[in-house]
Each structure stands twice: as C-alpha cells, then as structure tokens.
Image (cartoon, rainbow, N blue to C red; front, top):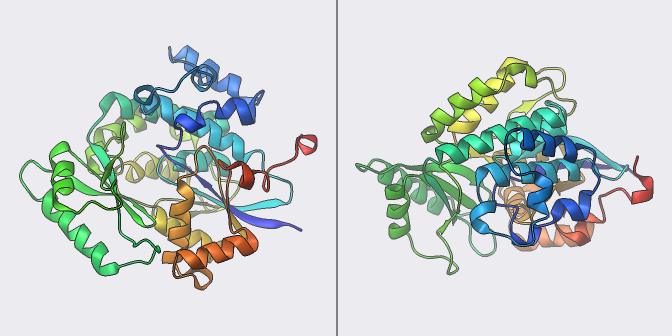
Length: 349
C-alpha cells in the first residue's frame, strides 16, 4: 500500500556531536559524495568525508556556515534518495537552509547544483557573519498556542528594534518557537527583557548569523552574483517555500525561483509554520518525513500541525495519540523511525 508523504528538509543547527559520522553510517559509498568532495577540494575546503569522519567533534568548527551547511545538505539529500518504494513523495519543503535542499529533493536543481548553492551561501554567510539568532518559545508545555502572548512578544521585538543602535526582528516562525535575529545590542536587550523559560530559553544559536532579515542584503547580493539562473528549473514535485507558496512542476518560472531563493528567502522572515500548514492542507499526506541529520525539527513540525488544527489536534497529547496510532511523523535522524521509511539494502538500485 502506497504511503503519501511530505518530505521536510532541516536547516542549520542539526549536525551536532551526535551526528558526527552520519554520512559514513548511512551513506557510505553514495555516488554523489565524491562529487561533493571534489568540489570542496577544488575550492581549498576540507572535504565532507574528512569532516564527517573526524575523530572528534568541535563545536567551533562544525557551527561554521561553510562546514555545517554542506554536511546537512548532503545528509538530508541522500536520506531523501533512500526512501522506500511504497513512499510516494507528494510535496517537499524545508526549514531555512533546508529550502536549498528541498529544491534538490524536488528536482528544481540537480544534486550538484544544489550543492553549489548550499556551499556558496554557507561560505558567504560565514565570511560576512552579520548578527546572530536566538530562539524563544511561544507555546506552553502542552504545545497550546497563546495568541496574546505571541503578539506581545512580537510587539516587544518591534519596540527593541526601534531603539537606537538595536536591530531585532523575526527570523523564523518555527512552530512553537520564535527564532529572532539581530545585532548584539538587540539580542541582548531581548534576553534582558523576557523571563527565562525551562531554564534555557532565550537560547543563542552559536555560529548563526541574522538569517532571514534585511541585515543579510549584502549576502543575498553576493549570492545572486555567484549563482546563475540556469542552475534553477521547474521542480519535478511540488515544493513549498518559506511563505507557504507552492512551486508547481508545470507552473514555475526559473528566473522567479532564482530571485526568490537568493532574494526574499534570504532577507525576509521564513514562515516554516505556514509551509507545514500548506503542506498538510493542500496535500493531505499520510505521513511527514523529516530527513536527517538530527532530530530537533520533529517538534516544530508537530507544533505546526497543532497550530494548523490538523486532523483536530489541539495539544501535545493529541499529536502523541496520532503518532502512536499511525506514525504520522518519521524523523530519519532517529533509527527507530528511519527503519520504517527507507529501502532495505537488497531493494535499492
């Protein structure tokens, strides 16, 4: 029986200590890895194979945009290419940097073209390193939304951004989390103004710049200069962007996709919650598959489905009931869930 699935590609912050060796464990001998390694070597960069195979993990190294982005891209793309034959991918989306991977999974760029986009943008983000990010929850422990609290927090963000010397704005609407981006003054002001939640929020994201804000205008401009429009084409599967727009196989303009990917996608807020809402309502999949590496995006997907009221869910317990009954979400970074959605080795071609 065919299972209709939406594939979701993760963004930065998902290749951490536990993920070291992910490519070797799951994708040793994959045909695209030598291609990606050769491209890195030609640019004077350490290869993915060497980075993934390192003896120890260094947060300082692996948080860099020019290291994290291509490792995540390769892991995620290759995961998507190992899905079982009974999985029909009806749409693809991603979070933040995962948009680039989603383009490759959907066929709007080739695997090599997607790697060029990711490696270039990761390098530019690292070289410019403008601003930073933090995360802060807006739902309660049961994942129930509080619209008044959300509005109050966003008003506080706007008030801080209006102060002299401060920059702060919404970067990503990530289910039950707000990802905020700004300069040091703006981020520090927010940290001082809000109560600590769960003993760890607000949480800074190391190695992250002020993604999805106009502070990245110079990065977007450099990306457009470096990455030609002919890298992009119409997708083979529908792909949902960070505004919730669907790019269809027979209705996509190459220039418009290039302009969005290296324009609005870089400098305006990314609405991951909206992307998941559209995926659920427009494609009504049997399951949502989050490719690796990492496992952290699954919570944001679940929270987004609750916020959308998908299948009557209103809280964490509702999602857990649906998950236990029919496996609504499969995170490929988890071995138990991965086994349910990948091809058996003897079945792979």
